[in-house]
Length: 462
Image 1 (cartoon, one colour):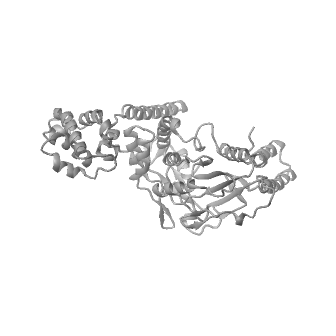
Image 2 (cartoon, one colour):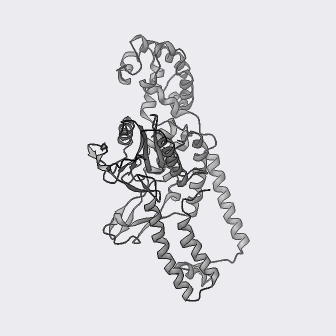
Image 3 (cartoon, helix red, strand yellow):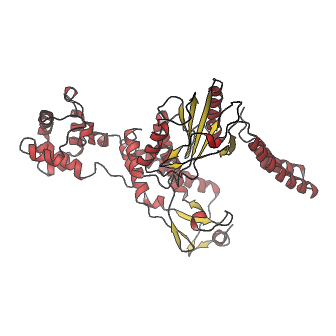
């Protein structure tokens, strides 16, 4: 025990307060009551939050309006929902809420008569106000409210989100604070709360997740991602005059650059997550004041990886024979090529554009390209068509370590086998030293399973 715990164990007082003796049963009972009460409060908070108010606010965007021939009942249900939600505010402003549905019909008719067409209507809501304020004042008051104040709010529990962070110097030869590994120390209450929120999010989003995202999902792992890549390549290379090209993508601080407002938009529109829960996540990620002090230098907090995979879920390839395989931020663009084709085609351009729009920065210097072929004629990697990202050429390599396994351009895995042998030889020396010290066989078996067998059986699936 540390000094703080020893100060409690060695005395019956703590900071001047007399501690009453209690047995383990009472402690466990109190702990279970606390966690149970927390679960009930959070469940009640998110039990009836999917009122659809955020979805109904799409009426404020003319890009969401349909063409005139399909606009007969467009927005009627949303107007009723918004009117009910803002009813106290509208009544306090003297608005006749009963006239809003009829004025909504008039507003639509006037705008379509004025030449509205989806994507081409150039008028803004201030212009609409000047045009139709005298005919539709009540419904325009509603739209003024939608454009002025938020539909709902959700404040996360700041006391639970307080997080201490330390940075260790376990990395060899650290030269700057960025070389130090952050270690977050959160309270048990916050860990329980995050687990509850995570389970709720997973249940709601799992059916809509990208099938080629293998991280943080049940019954999936790094081995599945590597097996998918190898199986796709082997099947394709059985065809004549075929090859495969893999672009191993590296992001610059992927978790740190996650944009909360972009994530909130995707959670609401793509995954149809509860409005209140989406706002809670947005508030949780945007207003957290956290600082880490390392030799008078300050640093921030990394975003949660499960939220990152939701933010990148819409990054998918729609081109045949092109796949975006993802394991969290470890992404591979796999292009199955035939004939004279030697490049990633438009799939790479769309991927780069998606990264730019999502504010994810590609680390071009660490992104590598690899060409896999079983052609009998030896191929010089430098002779392959060069891949460019933002005008910078990508290096074509013969080997690359992906998710702990070294891939080579002939899929022989000789470099990976040599790496395993090298590690095993190092650990065998330690095993021999333990044997020379007369260590018991049970301890040696434990050492063997932990330090040798784990290396030899890594990525072996049955």
